[in-house]
Length: 260
Image 1: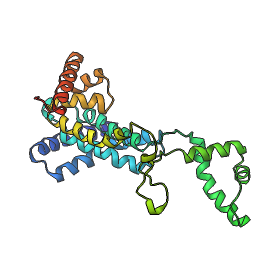
Image 2 (image 1 turned 180 degrees about the vertical axis):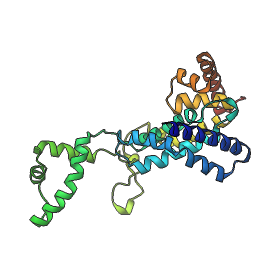
Image 3 (image 1 turned 135 degrees about the vertical axis):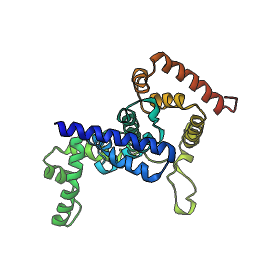
Image 4 (image 1 turned 60 degrees about the vertical axis):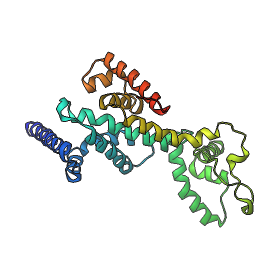
């Protein structure tokens, strides 16, 4: 037990030393050392989230490392915060945003996902045995589930991912027509502009002072409460609220082309 505590203290001291060095040098080698020393923070989050989704542990680990790198780049040792407490919201936020982007519009029960995976091998076996494509009734019987449930699983799997409005429709000769052109949706342009708005938002954030930017990112990008942000940044909840109001007003002016 004592050895474990000593090792943890040594890790914290070494991380702090490297963080100070990185703040001055911005060396890629130093940053990589910091990632190596603190990879345990990412592993802990990845282990938690892998049980909440269908993504692989390796993918979540890579995404979490991006959050760890962001935390390394933004951490200020002089403020006296523990790096682990500072980094976890960045790691968790990066994974959560990845899962939101990857998540389907329809949430499928884990049991159905498992049955869908089993059906791949079963359909292959039945096709070889019967020398034809098996019927839904035959697949359901092999899976030992009711026919209606198998049909619901198939439908849910087919509708899991949204169909892109850029999908070409019609004959190949006139393939310039997309689904978005024929669907009467007046809000389609908002989807086209979403990426541009995101870029403008990131550009506006860069212009804010560091503490105000951190408050907005923690509240709106990492879904922390104002109380959690106050504890993380060692400031009062009132200060967090004021920073949010000030930052939102500044971003509004920046994005509208006015003075900051």
